[in-house]
Length: 186
Length: 186
DNA sequence: GTCTATAGGAAGATAGAC
DNA sequence: GTCTATCTTCCTATAGAC
Image 1 (cartoon, chains in turn blue, cyan, green, red):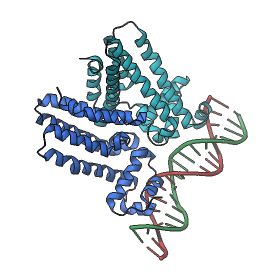
Image 2 (cartoon, rainbow over the protein chains, first blue to last red):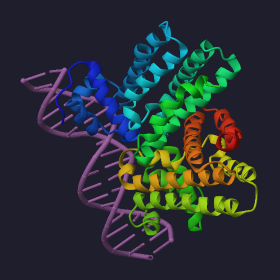
Image 3 (cartoon, each protein chain N blue to C red):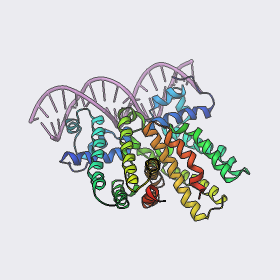
Image 4 (tube, rainbow over the protein chains, first blue to last red):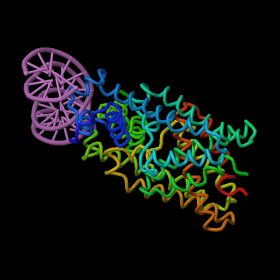
């Protein structure tokens, strides 16, 4: 049992680790309790609806991460190339070099699908639009930007799956390196 | 409870459906029993080590599928372009137009990771080599073929995640269409 | 807020009759 | 091979004292 996590944000971060490692169904209350250092009762105090609330909070915090880390980059006056390069750095840190699974792929399985499927779809769509916006900024035709942003969204999640499946960060790293060219290159 | 499945192959196919829909941890014996029409005892008769054996059989059958459906294409005297086009058709059928999850991504989560992680890695590597072989046949330099086969492997799994996450077959279909060009195009 | 205790059920797995 | 019955363990969730 880890030391107790005091601020709610840190609690949710530790919950996220468990969900990302074990998936929704595999994340038992015992694992969630151990990871946070909080007893079952304390968890239910913070999250009255139990596991479902915890997963929801984790998903929301992941949304917040996007707003906090990605939006400022978008709104900066950097060039599109520079923006996408910073994006790549953020993604690299967020997914720990590709060894950390994405919640979105975990939450379209089994019970979680019914609970969070729509939120997952919405989030995927938002990320895709973000990529498309950068490509448009770089001067690509909106249709071409949409096509490329889908490719890049696919590449991101595929690279995570493959890197984790092979136990090798290489594929994810190579994807991030090629990302600017994939999105906007000729 | 579905009608009983007689031949072992069909039993394993039905087990696979459950694993693909619910993941390893989410696939409870009740679900597995209902899907096959076999009681618990019967399941343990066929699979003495329970769920672990069932998942193993499912993984093995998925390997067999590759050998039965993909190897003949590889060994045919079709052009590389024709081979990859047939590959795409097989993949489309196997993943039901992109709405069916891949076992490999499900088995690198939680408990399944420890049990099947190495087999998953081996299988990913084999698929990658298959793609690379076709690209080589098409005349690409081995290094370039390796690079492209990784991209295509990433694209395949990413397209599955995104299509399922969005509840839209479009991304997977577009990936399959672009597959020949991605692997061998200029 | 956190503790202990426990309900109530579902999980994986097994035994023995047929 | 399949059935019923059962075991043990684990699960989510709640109640009530502190």
